[in-house]
Length: 322
Image 1 (cartoon, helix red, strand yellow):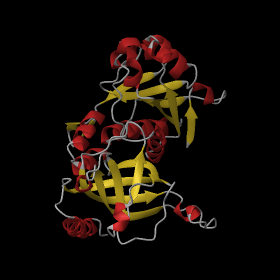
Image 2: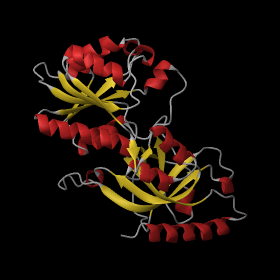
Image 3: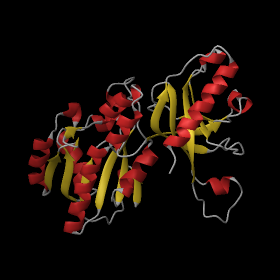
Image 4: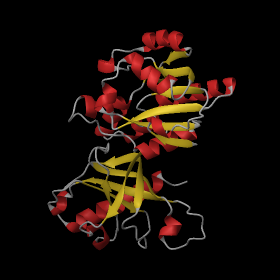
């Protein structure tokens, strides 16, 4: 799969394309319908399927300070889109200049001049151009002018409308199972493992403390079951002959401020079940959330906390057992 950052990365000799456009934050099941339809047309017309997405989120440029919590990084978004059948993913920098383009100018400069679009697939609620003046009807009208066909696809799953906003709402409530149903996979939080207070190690449950990326959609405070991923773990351990395989461990995950210890900073910590030998400091990891176990609680003693952590680990082990 090709990855382009901006229009200038498109090869000068690039031929015709089947294109879909959107932010695609989370690449949820509604987005997957768009990409599936785009890939289907690409096969029928023997042309590459190109996905256009944006970074940063348009809301932050149009309405500064309103950046929504992001469901995935631009890199992971591209990976997911590639897995769905995209031949190329263009991350288009969303700038103030781009936001001020009229609908016709946007279509001509992005879809026509660079990508030579012959079919364009968008969500039924797609808007584009300055002040979101363009909609699917205008896109189809402009398609007649520039010789491409356009269609709007309903963003639904199981017959119900689906949106990135709805996924964020599920996560804010701690409903990671509901988010999984909308996404078609567990929600993932990514970040670099940093040194924390190391209380987990002292308590017998060494955790990977994530410094999550800015604007990450983090589930509601609580304890969860899930998985800890470490890309290229073998190389991190010095094994350069292993082909950089990823590692994945069942995990118990805690989000919150550690109220038993009067903590003040919100953290995301993952304990790889039954592993006390992992050194992941400095590694970029991902944490997948599959089930919510309980709320974050303040315990009267460290002993009571340890007892509860053991129960949490047992429950997480049962829920992640293959």
